[in-house]
Length: 191
Length: 256
Ligand SMILES: [Zn+2]
Image 1 (tube, rainbow over the protein chains, first blue to last red):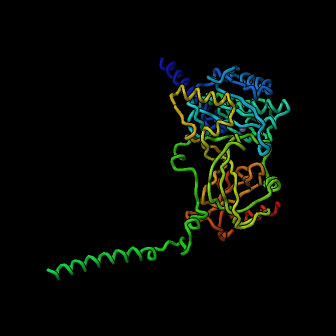
Image 2 (cartoon, chains in turn brown, yellow; image 1 turned 180 degrees about the horizontal axis):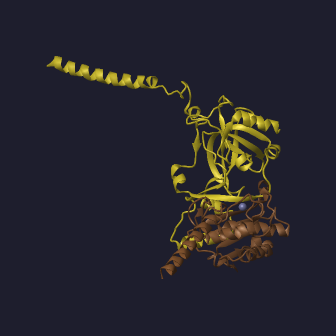
Image 3 (tube, each protein chain N blue to C red; image 1 turned 90 degrees about the horizontal axis):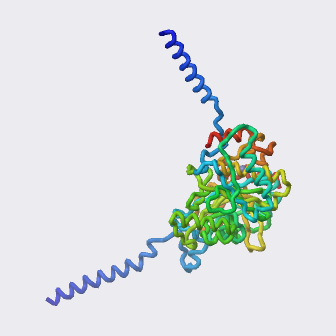
């Protein structure tokens, strides 16, 4: 009887040690400000404005890539919607001025009362807006990876200099065009 | 009795004369170092730092930050080559703001003094109209240049939240990550191109085109000053680190 007790105690101890060590070695992503969608990502509704209809196929491919990442599960599900009233992610496009020729796109985050927030702040956000620069974005594969990267910002991921992350910025010479393991891990860390 | 009346009248007169004398003498006793005798009011207030951004606007404005996706790293050489004028400037005023020429973060308009020239044909001591990136804009002004669907959404959400906004009097503070706002009375190094459509010198180069120098904010009158470039420091907007103006301008000149 005491032997069985001893064995059970050993087993419990083993599990405790394993779980503590796995926690310590689990990746803590450095490329997030740790703020996220206040409504979660289980049904992320995205709206494509008529100004961005040129990019519809790139946007749909990017959304599909975040749902099916090739690197295991994450809680993201995305639905295209035709109204902005309850959407999480609104995508617009415009011909930005010449001084923005180096800018592919920009993203902003907002509260449920339509106040803009800082990415390096502490408050979670209700929705995000992406604006794509039509002057810069012409080639289709680049467009998809740019939209995928911007969607990453919407989910709460920050820019990263690691070339094998979709969150690497083109100016830091990103080598990948799709969501990677590290990006998927970060989504799972945030949600 | 009469003597008493004379005495009272004498004392009263003395007090009156003393008051008149004190009032007459006062201006010459309390000399303001900024007032030169014979100066008119217009001359006295000339180049006094001023701004339309009141404390109340600063406290109540929504703070908005825009994160951009750059295609290529901006090099110092690239920036210098694409800039006509590089100068040490002192900001006299922030007069107004508009999103007409920049729907992303808007522009702040005002006057600045060219303190010294690093590149270009501007003259030292010259006062020019500038347009800086970002700043404080009324929501009404900013929304004029935003997509209709985005404005409708914001109106809908405000209504849902019970917020009644006077858009003409409510401000949004817009700026890019790392960029700084211009402030009246402060001294900067500025990269500028003349924009004929605006009729102003447009400060360019984002966070690398406007950097503050470690010179005390001018409170009284913006005028040209001598700058010791070994002692004065320049602040890098990306890292927050300082380097001497001398070492910075040497780098600029070696890239020209
Ligand atoms: Zn980015």
